[in-house]
Image (cartoon, rainbow, N blue to C red; front, side):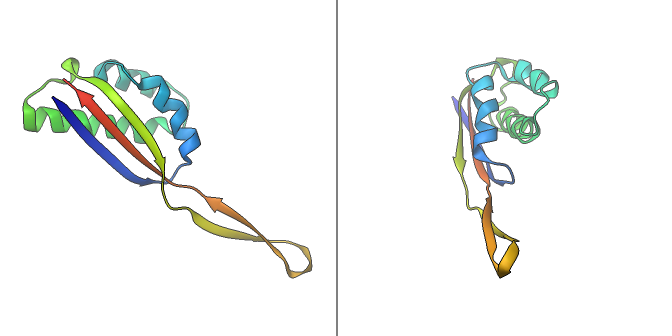
Length: 109
């Protein structure tokens, strides 16, 4: 049985979130939540919250314990980016983007 949870518009670059997504793929949910507490990356908090939310959904709807769940797939896609401008000399401006992410977790139990 597959349980799916999605976090949209996470205020973090997809490239940074994908680094942790590859670490937690195909692992046990209970072990992953403990491991993410000790990883010193900013992306560990939104990924941990999403996995915990998916595990809570599995427990409420399908009566499956978190110890019996594994992460089947986790994908990180780019979301819309905020465009900002930095003023520079001679009245010009340099543009840069503040990127966002959509994170999707599929659990199997």
